[in-house]
Amino acid sequence: MKRNLVLLLSVLALFGCSQNVSTPVLTIEGGQVQGVASDLPGVVVYRGIPYAAPPIGDLRWKEPQPVVPWQGVKLCDKFGHPGYQAVHYPGGYTTEWGYGDESPYSEDCLYLNVWTKASGQPGKKLPVALWIHGGGYREGWGSEPEFDAQEWGAKDVVIVSINYRLGVFGFLTHPELSAESPHGVSGNYGILDQIEALKWIKKNIAQFGGDPDNVMIFGQSAGAGSVKTLCESPLARGLFNKAIIMSGGGLTVPTPAPAGAAPAGRMGGMRGMFRQMSLAESEQQTKEVMDWAGLTDLKKMRAASTEMIYSLGNIYNAASGKFAFLTAMPIVDGYVSKESFDAAAKDGSLADVPYMIGYTLNDMGDMAGGIAAFCLNREEKGAKAWAYEFARPLPTDGRSNVLSGAFHSSDLWFVFKSLQHCWRPWTQGDWDLSEKMLTAWTNFAKTGDPGLGWAPYTRENSQFMLFKLDAEDKEASEQGAPIKP
Image (cartoon, rainbow, N blue to C red; front, top):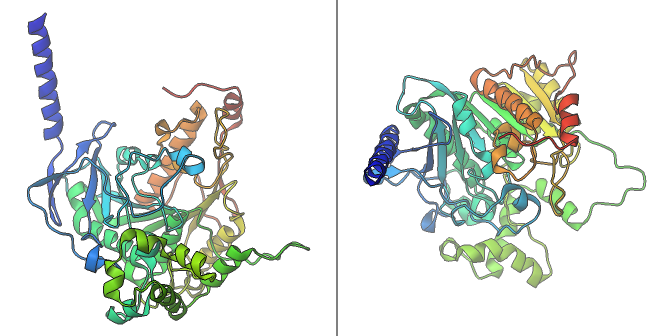
């Protein structure tokens, strides 16, 4: 018996070694990397690959710099740091995504992850997708559990997810920052990080079996807003070939306020004012706050602690009785962003690529009108856009303090087919719907057409693809059909 046990352990040890050997060592920008096996046969994941130098110290609020080389083979088995952000407490989205297993938040956050079935096969030329996470430009990271992308890899797409600089670390403007820039601007560092990731793909993705000339960008919420900025930015032109905008709206469609409606609240009014703020106005507002805090030059600003910089806007507003909004989202700066997404769509300067665009039934406002307007704009420009609505109210086990309905972000579980990471009592219909959506998204990455008999939105075909359970699945769901094993 003892001899048999020793033999079994030896076989298991050899199996473990063969698994390790089966993930090839790749030579990329910065050094050599080795991935690890995912849960799906043949799919290898590379976690935490640095794609630029850590943007800390003197590199805080600068364009991303070349990656720092490393010695030996980097085993990419752990995800990199998310961008610095607030602590997440239970309830709402935190309960939905199950935060807690990620690396500590840090300004040192420029890491990406790759899932692929063709590691070490540069001639394979599989389509590539770059995922940009949402979170209001102030939170989130590319390795959240709902973004487990192994199913994309299994569909023969090389998929990359990234972390990028967030909040004041990713978008702060200041007169001195503009003065030191060779382009005379400041802000948009988080967007520059995303562009750097696209450049990394262009230079390195062939090693993972990907085609650097067949790249799709997609994102949700602020990630969709980032996609919109990239589609307008001249700096990203030629780095991608398709785009998906998820719950990021379309073109702005004015809607009259209902009779007797109350005026926007203080924060709503301030946000509206900020959306129209020029770079010069934004810079001046930042300078006012920094000077108040004694951070009167860039040396002092860059020497200040991460925690101080992160909290400074709130401290200033509470202590001064004034309101200042330190830039924490993309801004039209004349370099990274020349004009708004709407303006670029209307004047024809938007990236000329196929688009997929949609929202969820209970999203953050009714986005259907703006999405339809965008699709018709694309038709007018001789291009194509596919529109969709996700209308599956997520099942629940009755617990309180959780999100309900087809809420903003609820489609993420389905697009990545990552339902196994969620506490919700999924039915077979949910798994089937997820497979349908995964197929459409990966088809789009491959060819620029989602397939499934889904036609582009036009004046003659003004139809959204509706993603929901069919009648039989809905009945089973209401009866509490068991989760797929």
